Image (tube, rainbow, N blue to C red; front, side, top):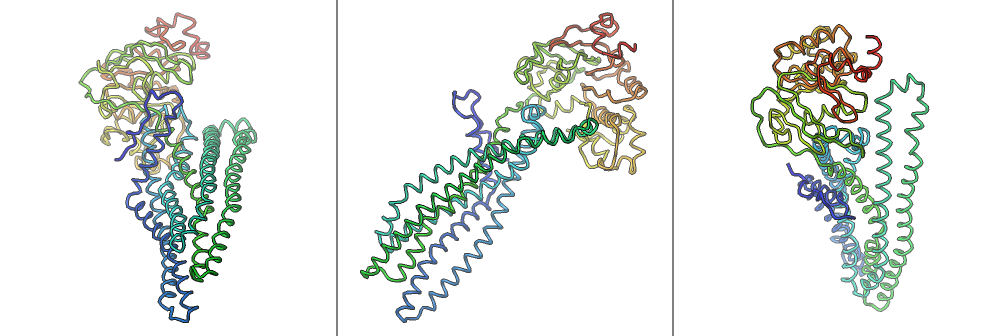
Amino acid sequence: MTTVSDAAPDPVAPQGRDPVAPLARALERAALRHGGAHCAALCLVSLAATAAGLLLPAVLGRALDLLLAGEPATRWVGSATALVVLLGVLDACAGVVSGTADGRAAAWLRRRVTGHVLALGPRAGDRFGAGDLAARLVGNAAQAGTSPAAVAALLAALAGPVGGVVALGIIDWRLAVLLLAGAPPLALLLRTLARSTTACVADYQRVQGRMAADLAEAVGGFRTIAAAGIQDRETARILRPLPELSRAGHRMWHVQGRAAAQAVTVAPLLQLGVVALAGFLLTRGEVSVGDLLAASRYAVLATGVGVLVGRLAALARARAAARRLAEVLAEPAPAPGTRGLPSGPGRLELRQVTVRRGGRTVLDGLDLVVPGGTALAVVGRSGTGKSLLARIAGRLTDPDAGEVLLDGVPLAQVRHDDLRRAVAFAFARPALLGTTIEDALSYGAAAPSPARVRSAAREARADSFVERLPHGWATPCADAPRSGGESQRLGLTRAFAHGGRLLILDDALSSLDTVTEHHVTEGLFAPGTARTRLLIAHRATTAARADTVAWLEEGRVRAVGPHEVLWRDPEYRAVFGEETTRR
């Protein structure tokens, strides 16, 4: 697959240089290439339509001269009719080919950016937000996908004025010189338009993305909003940027309208000058009546700034959208490793791991060792970096400093497939990806057998829930209503089914009822379990079952030891809040 990695910005770009611009240009070129033959066909069709439009005034002028002279003009009238029909056919073909090229380019852009977002992992959501990412992948990718058609249309629009000037020169060189005398103001007008439109469109798309992010956040928390009775307040918050969006839109149309108005003041004067000069030459017998007719039409084509304004505006919108996609691609994704993972017990080691988010150091020089085959519970107050540690431990994201090793091999060096087979995750809010429940539980780098999935479901106490569904294991995920605890049991089933030497549970037991948690943890912490287990724990009962507990505080490991030993410290007990009081 073609990539744009060769145009990735230098990580040490000179100060003042825009690192996203070259990547955006490379993305436009790649989209153009992925339009393939459709882009080439679109250029040919557009240029053919322009050529036909340039021929038509000459043919009509010749037909008029013959008719005025009383000579047969049937062939020329027929040619003019054929050209009109051809123009209609070419316009229709251009519409079909343009739509196909746009669709292919947009599809490639979505695949390219989606792949990079998935490679970034949680970092993408942290950096841009789910709503803004959705806006970029849906709206901006479609807008950027129009770049091939916009380029072809702009080339055809430029060919019209150039061809018009050449045609005027063929009729009489003085006509072309007169028209070229007014070209500099028009060129300056178009240059100013391109710059101003790009800035306005970028502002408009940026505000759209912000509103999409706010909307996604509200949809995710709709139960909280409804329970608090603040629907009107949230609606006002989401729509608060509307005036800014309106101003950006008005600026965009104001720029285009002003350019069109300025063009109207210059272009008609040039057209009138050409017609007047052609009329003067007609009185002197240097041009014919047909030439006068053709010259009037070529003057309109040569000063067709209105068409160019529209084409430039479309290209500016596509380029602004491509830049927003390039901003996502500019985020560095973890480089895939090349080493295989040797056999081992699953010993996990974090060495001087430091992670920064939003200008804050969340994990600070953290050292931690989990011996193979043991269970470590990570506890700490909210905001101490527990979930971030879980991501780091399974390389869903990379640390800013330090390294993580599994059986002595740095995770950054391990091949992707080997790593995903070795590490299994379960989350507090698991996402079920797949058509049916069984598909969702088998989802992964290597699909487990149906027997293994059912065995894992029994371990997670999810088998009875699944078998009560309308179609059992074949029930579509969308038709399987489930509670938070049932979703967590399915997430645990998927993690258990995929095996691996390291199992990471990121608060994956928090929604289970006490009885179910007891049964699940009995199997999870059973003696002789081969895999290494890392658990983000919020309950004292869960921490008590682990072999060892790591107590995080302010991004550092404050203490490591058995739960019953740490429990003697009142500050440790305070980590579990109200549960401590009940105990």
